[in-house]
Image 1 (tube, rainbow, N blue to C red):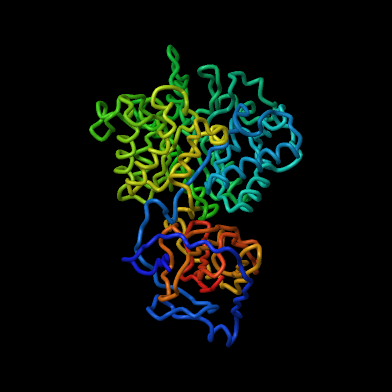
Image 2: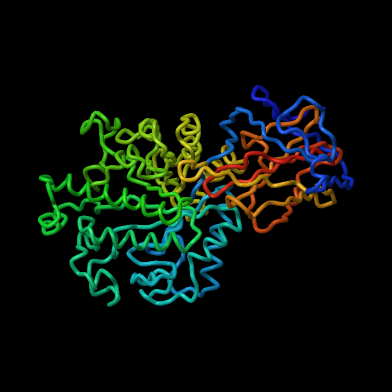
Length: 553
């Protein structure tokens, strides 16, 4: 019978098992521990010897097969916006039960689409969606009243529910926006911006903290350090808002700040960029000092500079984050002040002013030689808005492009509502083409490269429901965040390598206890299979070995 044997770096044959008309029960069990462990463990690296049914093998050999269609690791994100109740909560004043139910439905959507990361906006406007005593009020987007306790801890609940679903959760923070209105008196009396009225300015009908004031930057950093130290978030995420987007006929009112804090700077524009640069650098240091495993990422506006402004810029002709927002995103990458970057490439392929493909290639060159991981920000909300966006394949083709550009490690989609709406079935088409298998988190060894302990398969038990795989894992050493399970049909003629692709990745789950199980309902009677399991740390580092069992269904 034809089989799929992911055995060596030179062999990768993908075939489906032949269907059978019925099943029979089986029990393949290997005791773990003591002398029985020694007798049952197989060779530590792949060998040409035939596998023994029911035997548990420890595998440490690795191959170098890559598969762009089924990557082993990939960032697959979805932004869940809370400002103005864009995504969650859908409106203010919902009950605790209703807010929780809505949040669970967003997380379930991410699982359904085989995403692995949610970026949840928990500080939309100098407010918060977690318990804190540092002065910032509860967000009005929860209850309708700024400062009113929602009756639970939204961030703690979100982290718990995300991890329960084997999703990473990044706390999305808007650092400098104080309010979507301009009045200070609209804020609660205890708000830091009201207690420090010189800390912020009104511009374009909104209010912003002044990035040029050192005390402002220090305060925001203290908020982030407190969050990271007390919550089990996987990352902290900034969007594209630093200095405000330009408003015609208005100037940013920071002349007093500039006069006071300019130092040796003779250009206010350069000084503003330096304020943001220092802030990004210091946030990065503070987060890693609080918890080394928590990553820091930014999703800047997609154009740094046009080539007409700088020979280092992209072949584009749009607004520049460098000059319009004073966000020198290229410097952050080159200085390794961020761990990942998700430029908002919210344009279609072939768009004259900002061609998606041109910008993908430009950003890929910027991360070269750095430790910064590149993902693309995708405009799911633009589908069916006219022109090229009326093509249901536009987003699918974006990922076809990025999968061919090796520095790109994934994508994130704005926004959750657009992912759920699935206009023109664009998300369905994309998922069918690119997300037919799960993917593990992108490794971040620059944060922490310690490997978790290897989980041990205990048994594989067949029933009418499928194959129940049971394993044990250790709570000692580097914490196991996720467990990855592969399964493929095989003749058993060779002992496999640790899987380097996602081709046969069937299930990713969270470690919840020493002994866990998962039932695989996709097996066929009489077919022989390999099951393999590995542990994954919070920073995406896998265990040095895997365990595997060869069975007949």
